[in-house]
Image 1 (cartoon, one colour):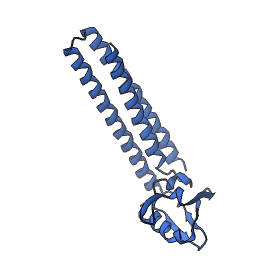
Image 2 (tube, helix red, strand yellow):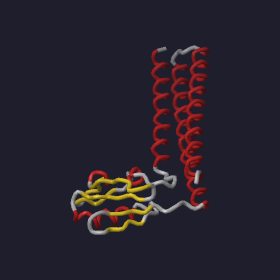
Image 3 (cartoon, helix red, strand yellow):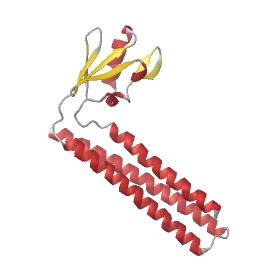
Length: 186
């Protein structure tokens, strides 16, 4: 029975990781307001090694539509500008010799719909991962059945795994719905 508990705990942990990963991915989808986390994925070539932007300069918001990047070293201004452009975020950085200013464009209706599709796609990927965890856990339970686990314990375990799957799938749906409302809000 201890092996069953371990399998169930691992399945729950893995499903939780799927939801956490989805939260991170959804946070990368911008909803119109300027947010320093929009640049979290930007890697700058810092003396030959790709380095997160936050480790090379200070990223802040000037207002709801403007981001500023104040590099720790002035020679990095051009590298940071290149990195932001190459990150394909749809942002156009302006270098004034002191700081980099990024005006975040207002989202069009069409762009909002594209972002909603992206969010739903990320949600679907998370659900696929959760179902994969369910399959793996059920397979492990079935191997224990071959080693002497009773039919009732197998059935109870599979029901528990299905309840976990349903719970985490609902969490995914809720996260995507909240993000969709956030994106579509003008």
